Length: 52
Image 1 (cartoon, rainbow, N blue to C red):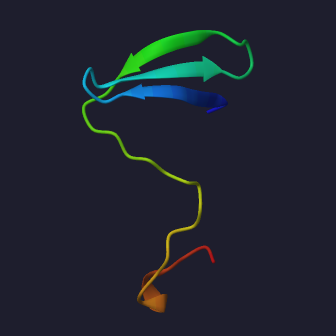
Image 2 (cartoon, one colour):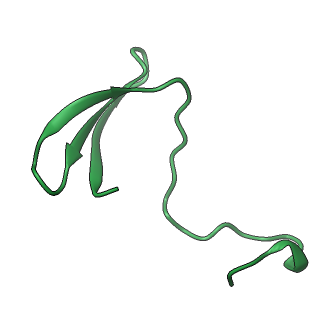
């Protein structure tokens, strides 16, 4: 929370992150990376959806 990814190094599996509260930047490693736009997921079956 309250972080911003500045760069992605896919070869090294590392992201450069900025803490928005302090301005501190650091590197974080990952095994798998999922890019999320922050939108609600779409639902194909309306009954399976909750919170809409």
